[in-house]
Image 1 (cartoon, rainbow, N blue to C red):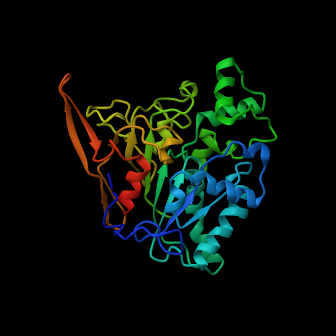
Image 2 (cartoon, rainbow, N blue to C red):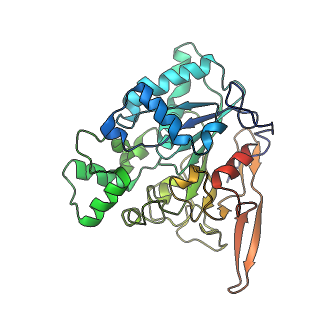
Length: 350
């Protein structure tokens, strides 16, 4: 397993939102996730940008140097790419934002948007006579790059091809706020598991995709019954961990459980998509909670370090604790008993 390092990111004082890096020496660029209300509201560009800022306001907005905002009522390879990703790539290149290397922080479907961008950005920019972005890594929270079975179910219901019982209807309404119809599915089509895994599956740029995952739920566990294996209430572990194929997985590791227990995981992910490296797992962190400023229990490390292709490494400090009643050992990231998942990641970037 490769690794992610302190070396990659030298410590600098935290600066305010400006042209300078807000964390460490490398600029942070945010790509938000799916916003269900946009399927109905179909916001214009100004509203997309406002809602993009609001999406991250709880924690990451003040830490970032820029964002790529996009509308959920559109498709990744369609208007999301041509009308939102491409103009921002040109701006970032002209401003030399990533000249010394930048980090992209994504959430949920932002993981899939980022993969499509990584596969195309160098070619697009070079063809326009511009310098490709120097992207050191992406940090993917609750990544939906492998799709979500909820996306499949929502599309089936919208197209009238799925049988809707009370439990499924309740789950879809909790997630989307309503039952969609065929005219307002947008990026849900890209979230279907097969579609997501076929969208730029092996990006041209070999950029490390570092994963941060949870096993909680914001939906009273009503959505989990429609997702295989362990999940964060919206996306199953096969996607958030970066597994090479969809499946019934219970951990991003074969040796440590989501709750930190050190034991063989017969259904742990062992084979990953290219350049996907799970780092932190939080047993009680939900899909939305991973990027919030709320603490949801201790965090364990699927891997204790990740190495970039440039040889630099980011190490995670952990402690193994013995639970005397059972004799089992548990591995926890130092400080995670008090610090949120997002703050732990921000501290690593520092």
